[in-house]
Length: 94
Image 1 (tube, rainbow, N blue to C red):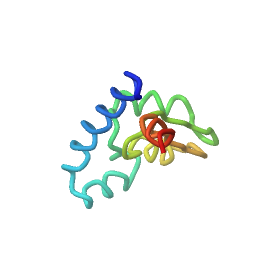
Image 2 (image 1 turned 30 degrees about the horizontal axis):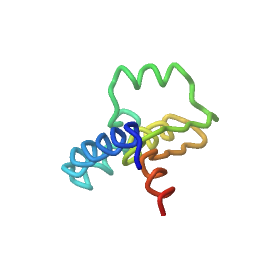
Image 3 (image 1 turned 90 degrees about the vertical axis):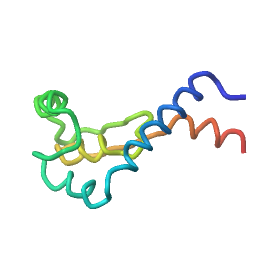
Image 4 (image 1 turned 120 degrees about the vertical axis):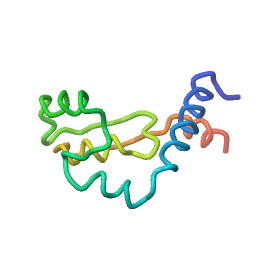
């Protein structure tokens, strides 16, 4: 039996996946070509640059396709790990 949180996390994953899938792979790869083109909000990027991520370890819950984690790595984070929480619920049922 899944929890309400797992259901909401899975729904959010599915919604984001449709958006991410609509982007062409070449465009997606090119968006990581430099820190000036990262696929994250400019306000968030400014805050992250001020945070000085160099050498830090970052974890993200419900990372979907990892675009934020890839962006954080490009901005200097040392280790970036993503975890899709709704998948844990699915695995626990096996």
